[in-house]
Image (cartoon, rainbow, N blue to C red; front, top):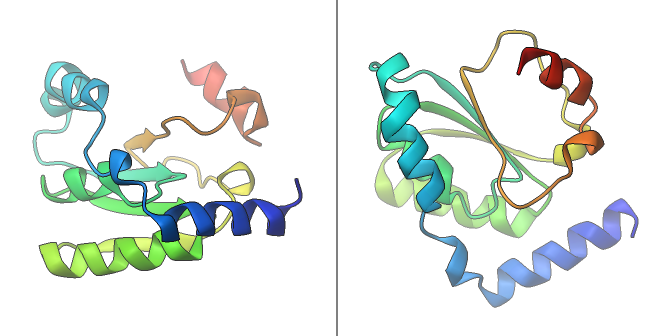
Length: 132
């Protein structure tokens, strides 16, 4: 599937509604409580790759994180923009393919990526693996 076909596929899914993807994943909430919160008591900069409707981005922003979201779907980003306005939180939103996102060194304290890519597909995967 080429980039435009992928975009059309996800735009259609988000237009039809993916209500199962509106609440943050329980794993993120658990990991946040066990690990993230203690190291970032004043929040920080987060990147939500393939963020979709923003279930993780909105949750983090409500905890004072500055969140950047990248998603392939114009529809998802549009719905997320509206949700952020309704919740009175600020998000930096970008339409783009998460697999092609160009990381800036030491820019984000937290990167969130759920149910989307195989790590080897990310252009910086070798850099991320060396950090683990």
